[in-house]
Length: 384
Image (cartoon, rainbow, N blue to C red; front, side, top):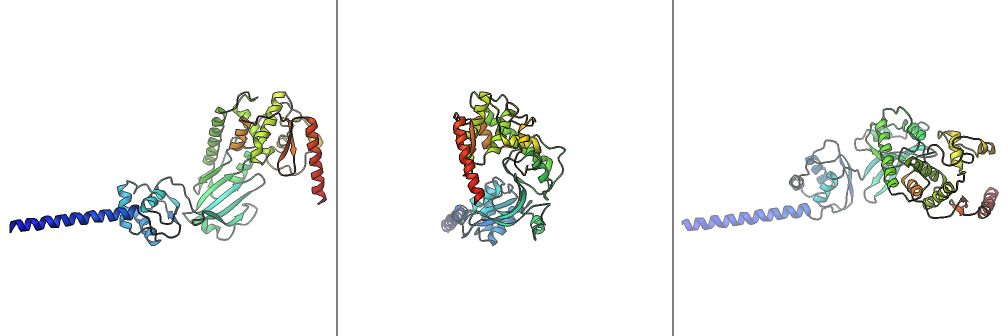
């Protein structure tokens, strides 16, 4: 009798152990295996949200099969308290483990509605766009120029939504005065800046920022990024450059930035100015003359007059030797890199070639021929 009871108890124990093992194995397969989601979705994690709430949302959207296993997996992997507020893409058939990684890892939003205030050389505008999680392409919902056009209908509701993200994008070649004046109009920023930052000191880049971010702190981040970029590239500069300080490199980079919008040309344009500096030739570049006239506060809006080319100003490189005293815009990383590692050429001249780029020349004779061709192209364009 006792033996029979012991045998039955042992059998029950073995069955329970097998069952427990099966349950654990099933749970692991549910957690790490292919998920049920058929199409990509955008999961919003509000600030202060709990893993329990997110697991319920994911169950409702069909992204996970079991909220309890999801929460246990997050707890076991010690990520249950590492939720990041934002909007995150969940790919089709993502496992629970992959979803937890997406919503706890970097905190960088990968989908949802975004308000992007873009500061360009000609104008600034605010674009409201949404990332389609299926195609990973942004869909523009609205666009307008703050201070000049009325805000689009529905913008207030979008900006009141706590999941909406905000971004500031600075174009390469904008001036510091432009940046500050335009950012004063950004409706989602707060605070003030006491003075316009030094020309060239702001990094053209994309800055994700919370609603209500302080303008002064944002500008400090722009300055910090530019300082880091300049220090990094200055340390890797080519030998023998006619540049004594990082500040001179920034000035040359700003001229390169304003002289060409063709990325591949930057090292060649830089080589022209480096060669001229080495040979003691004046730079003779129009963007510096324009900056001397406008102080970077507005486009000139017309051609440069001959009298202005002859007028002595600190920025008129047709008159002064060497570089102007400061940068004439905020150059991007690629223009700084070009100034510090220019192409190895003997070019001393360049002129527009009609295709959006430039024709380069080593001698004045070659340059004059390129200028003649450009004049013909200009005449043909006017005739059309």
